[in-house]
Image (tube, rainbow, N blue to C red; front, side, top):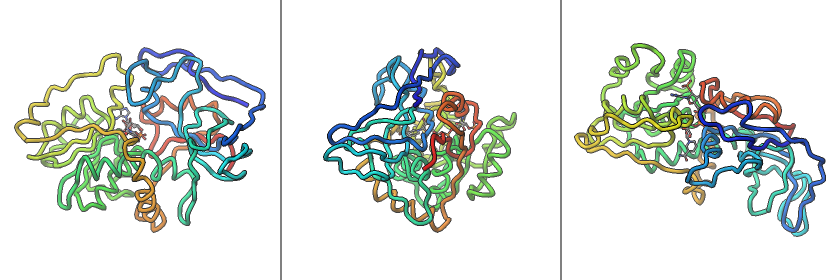
Length: 332
Ligand code: NDP
């Protein structure tokens, strides 16, 4: 079977030599309270750029020679002694970039696919991405009906859920994305009130059409965040969800316009989804209903085969994906 390990730490962008594929004999055996999982789907996430950087963060860095960290879905194909899982059970976990993996029972979650929901929704709306939008909006943005909310990275996985939950909360939702096609999708399919293309030369001027903003859900950081800092309403909340524009930078860019936080009595707050795990089941149930009744929409960008993971990962940084980027590793 194949697995992909970290080969070298990139200085800037991810390079062809950053990862290395290994081929091993499939002689994995689950021990006591362990399971052998055949991986079906893997999630590709901007955070992976952080995992391969040797700095202090919310998770330890992936070491050279270690299998690349990744959330995935898979099927239990062998259960060890005393395992709580049965063969054939669909599970999720941090399987990593591999086709097969032995996992401890406590590190895998049973996945129950309800009507109107697909297994891969658990890597998107019902997984880390969707839950990040859900709790970021609820706790950090505290968005209220009638407020103006702006979302960057809006056509991506987290952003597209944030936009829809903003509408659901009764806000007027403005979006920022990197192409006309993405902006059209956001307005026509997701019901965003107005989407702005940040690659347009008139972006800064265009954004003024939104007026001053009460809530900013930021996925990108950098220059876009700095521009938005000049567009804050009094008492604005900014949720620092991510800063993808800075993840490949050797030294992240500083902010020029942060003094408006003082004049506008605004709040800038980071958050990490891992702090909300206890509340996941209720949020998953709520969003499953939204998927089933069609009120929550989703899109996937699927790449085929584990060996495509390192090739596809940089797509997150060039904007090649609309919706959630996932790798199909094997059939369910
Ligand atoms: P996306 O599906 O949104 O993919 C990334 C998107 O970012 C790209 O499609 C691209 O779209 C956009 N982008 C890339 N480079 C830039 C740039 N320089 N400037 C502006 N936009 C850029 O990824 P996710 O939904 O998985 O993640 C979105 C954000 O959420 C990330 O910052 C991630 O780190 C963060 N996150 C945070 C979590 C937390 O717990 N705080 C948990 C999960 C994710 P475009 O064409 O519009 O440029």
